[in-house]
Length: 267
Ligand SMILES: [Zn+2]
Ligand SMILES: [Zn+2]
Image (cartoon, rainbow, N blue to C red):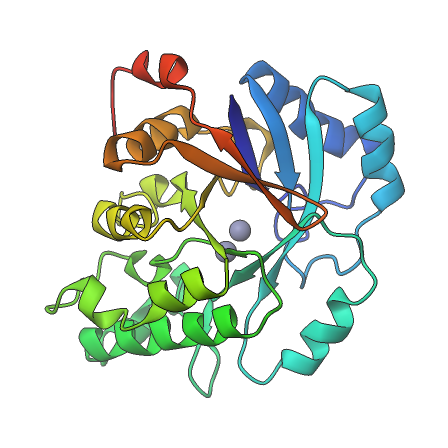
């Protein structure tokens, strides 16, 4: 069984939500054999999804489970705003994404601001990034920490091992019963590598931290992209189950060995 829990149906605000738009993503999910599709638009694009529209789509396409989440930009200092944004909304899951660092809220994963890496100590930067993710994990707002090592997006690598620079982050994720995400979008970024790296995934597996799968699709033709390979990778590092969410409840499902052993190329 394949799932894709990281879909931005509105991209970066280029589209507004309509039945046709949602349908284009759901139909692509069906074509790709996806059984559960999770929509999680950026909170800065849409704060209140049209839950009735999602319910109508679920009715129209009962063969694919539709889940509604949101990807929050976890910016330090935004906590009150985030709390009120999430209040009384029936999300199935909430992703706590860190895309900004430091006092100036540097958008470190945006190609326009890539220059920012040049005058920085990369080890320090990784440490600062993981500390910010730690704050997100501790906040209690989220079920999932997506793209855990997004700071590698442009290929700037630290000298120290990433697991050292992560400090106690994985322990906190486990203590807070959060899931991490295996996000295939990194394969299409300058770094050319899935998020998170094999060593982080392996460490997470050893600690029994659940994993979800996501493509981070911003266009319908990206739905389900490399999800089979991600499932095969998870299996290879030792995972035998993966996480799904319904009304914020984590549901573990078996990784389908038959389906993934048929995948020839493993990431
Ligand atoms: Zn993100
Ligand atoms: Zn995203």
